Amino acid sequence: MQFTLTDPVLTRQHAHGLVELARMADDYGLHSIGVGDTGFRLNEAASRVTLLALGTTRAYVGMRPTNPWTRDPQITAAFLATIDSMTGGRAFMEIATGDSAVRSVGRRPATRARLEEYVTCVRALLTTGHGRFDGREIDVYGGARAPVRVSVGAEGPRMLELAGGIAEAVSIGTGLTADVVSWSLERVRAGARLRGREPADVEAWFTVRSVLDADRESARKRIRPSLASILHHSMRAGVDGRLVPERHHDAVRAYVRHYALADHQRPGGANEQLMDRLGLTEFALDRWGMAGDPKDWIDRIATLRNSGIRRMWLANRGSLTQLRATLRNFGEQVLPRIR
Image (cartoon, rainbow, N blue to C red; front, side, top):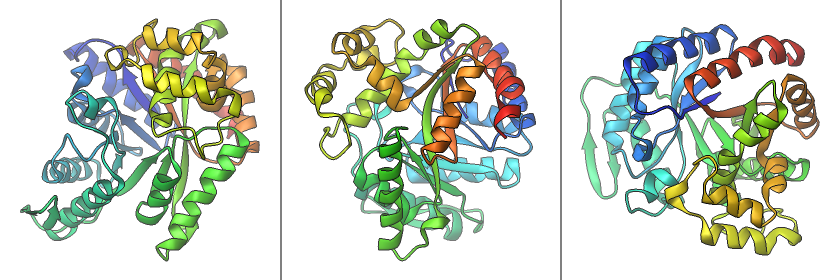
């Protein structure tokens, strides 16, 4: 489960609350807990992951995702080594090419080659103390250690194949409809086979933009900023070959072209309004979302299972109070019905 805290910059009260949130998630038996890595929001991810580590005894913790631009591999390796030691081997690294985190500092999303080189370097730094990245030799000191779990965030065919080739897990953001699920899994398997790996060795997790609320309409309203975000960055490379219904092609292209970074995930902002005007809101909800009350979630999860999904990353955003309520309702009203 991913938590995007929409409160202002962390205060001491928020810090205590995030530790308690992590403890709740751990008690409910969630596999992994992550927070986004973007300075765009003035909430430093390393600090928040440390709080997650302090609140857990079983769940994996990490940034979800980081990127190959805003953190040097040496810094990332040091962070992972620290968190992995603190948690007794429960750190993970999820990496993607970058969206708001890199665009807000004037960079373009990383190439697949850069991402793979970054992953290779971080692994080498952890296991041997020496790596190479971007033409530089990099050393760290402190002794070799075991590598950490690596997941690659993927939203296109070639990135899915790369994830299958190099990662322990893939976080699939292509969508949740049955045709997209089948296509995505085959691309991951193809990537694994191309590198001589067993496809079964790569865990496939599907990203679900989600809001759980006793009030169904409130949930559908609260999920809109998250849908507006993923609609943009999952389609920024174009609609061709991504199983987008032809009737939406022109609208999706227009949406990507006019997306406002300054309004990224802002409730009620220009991107939400643009998504509405272009008639894409229901398309985005069906493709990536899960919003409603506990019964809606139970029904939706059953549908996703029938589509071939076995593991889900639930991406939740809201205030600390909202996230606490979401987690409690999930743990007490949804989990017992789906396990």
